[in-house]
Length: 186
Image (cartoon, rainbow, N blue to C red):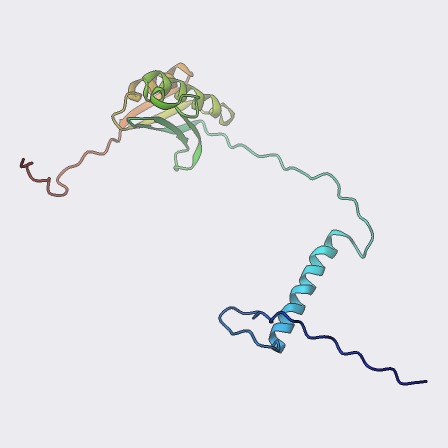
């Protein structure tokens, strides 16, 4: 048999990029870079191989959805933030974990109509409707802010059939605080 000439692979014209950031690119890849690449390839094959067992096509069955277990909360807290431009109604349990809520914007009002008392009432009714799945019967209401939806949002909760245990005003009021600005000189 005749000796066949050995073919050597042609060097790539593109420079090699460094596998690790911060190190300069060199013509030869270090053995550590090669082992990292090999590990990455093995992990990729394992992930792809887990989808099919040893090359055999395994049909994936329907995904099993676990039923969400809604906890029963007979007594809850309602936090109403009555701002100048919007009214936000949030239902929480007594530990402070959020159950759900609504706002005048979520109730379908946009622009200046969000800041009306009627929008606040609709938002409170919508939030109470969402809480029916939790079995909320009585609530403690905490009102914060001086917006136009302050009173009507409480009436919306009453019209939704909730028993109000207490109404607490948590509007932040400054006492002391920083030095007031000086008188305007024109």
